[in-house]
Length: 329
Image: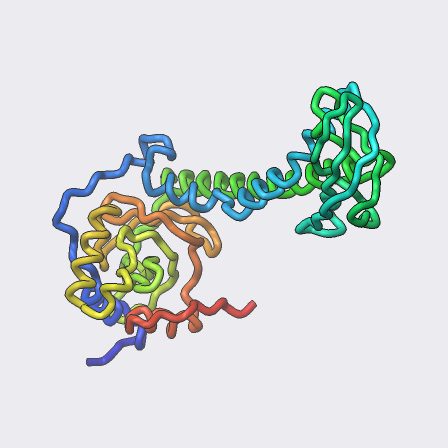
């Protein structure tokens, strides 16, 4: 059978492959999502999950928690000593703990001293510069109401620790906020595109990456023929996740597993059909494909289909997807 003008990636060949590889529709009930055209974006389950996943900086939050926990004792010491009243005592040096970030944070020096009221106190103070040795003595200033809060007298360790800790927390918080703002902008662009009155009717073929579960929507002119090549492609969330590793050895088990997962995630889209692309139909812009009256939320921008994409699409058809190459600048 001739492949036509589109060669190996002609519409007819890709449509046949997509129908063959498609997961059968789930038979169980699926909860419909709120309509983005009439509902706030946060009520649309898929859009809410995509936004939270993209906007939550787990690494930034963990780093913020780590720095805050490790520098909080210095902030408490600075507040207690700064508020007063204070007294001065000679302390004997015990263990000297190096910090995780040398040259950024001061050392923690364990000290033991006796207060003016005769109480023996074991605590730690921030110390900058040359590390004292065990058994040496340091002058410390302590809060008389809470002697465990102390600072090394004449040493810049405590103010350095407070300032460095605050700067590191600010950097971590900046990362968290930046991710949240970026996710908010992405959600706003998706909502604007999904509600756009401008719609470009197209034919499509939907191929699913069996590794990560992404769908790749291949776009064809609506009035074209069977031998057309794709004009554009856009990655979308299909509602059909990738099969679990335990099912990869059995085609029948894989089909039933992905069908059940698709029922939980939402009704799967048809592998071949017509769609309305809402938004700006230009390379690098956000478009939201509407398939069967439902949005297929994009995971990236609309891009032109180039010669470098042919092998990638054929790898999806073969079930051994590679990495999509970037077009030459």
